[in-house]
Image (cartoon, rainbow, N blue to C red; front, side, top):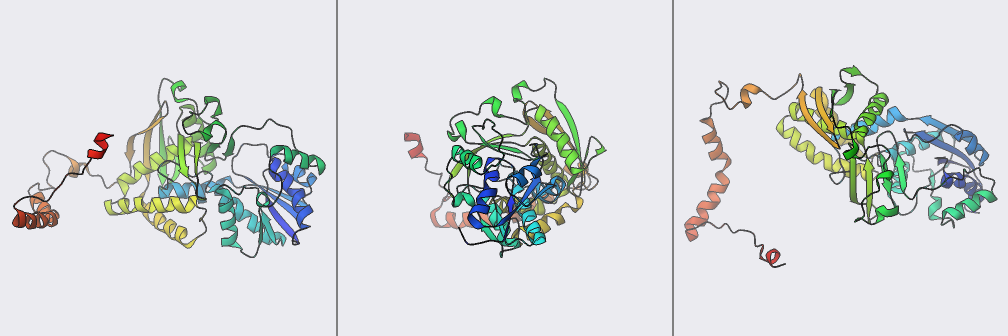
Length: 419
């Protein structure tokens, strides 16, 4: 038996792995086990999980609906930051783990537990996301990661362990893919996807229709934002969960939101993931379009720098860090005038902005027009260009005074031409 722990709070999905972890913790650590199941919109069967956890040996089981908190505090706030990991991944799994781990810590403190546990393997990103959250919120809790300790190495091993310990596990056919689903997205890894040259099979997708099989007529949708938060669809107000559920259905039917990505995992290896984020893709597009109207140039450009760093922090599991909190404060400040409506066209896998308006728009037709106007004297441009180009002019004059010609040299691409 390992070092004794009095009480452990386990992140519990009800699947084979976490079901087996319950008796394994009791057997190896001599502890009581409390399970926590977070409803993040995974659409898996949550009914009966409390009874199943108790039957597996848990002394208490929490099943909690965290969907609204998940969207408002994690998904929407990341979207408002414009954060996209490696230019394509909308971070659906990355910010799901911190909210689960946060609730684990809260319940551990409520129940007087001295340990927390998760069912992540020792090869992926999720173990880091769980454990960094534990450390950030309550580092006194002992962290137990069974996959880094036990001798179970296969599904057959886990099933045998479950049978030996009277754990109720449904005998279902296991998908060839490793999947994670919540209300924001669905990810697919493993199976044939481990070869980055092989295209995904169409029957793998769950949330999105094949773009070529989408409706022959496009759908037009208007998204209304208030201070950066999505509030309305086609002029009708929705709560966060209802809004994203409706957008997922609409965008998914038109094949919007598929991404096939080879990404750099935090642990140092590359992995290939296929993601479906239909509603989230629409929100990102719409929000970016509204910011193009309402943010001044310097803020807009600096926010793009912040977005990249924000995405890294989220992907790396550093949600509960001073830097992420400081960047979020900056983002909130930038959203004060991001209010308005964006119209988008959804058609066979594409999501295209076709209109945007805002009461705080900085776009002025009288300034932007190429026709005659009273607000912009085109002769002013000459002085501006002279000042703006002064460093280049000075450098060129030095070259000409010394050699009589420009120092510019074209890049040497000869090696590429030979290959």
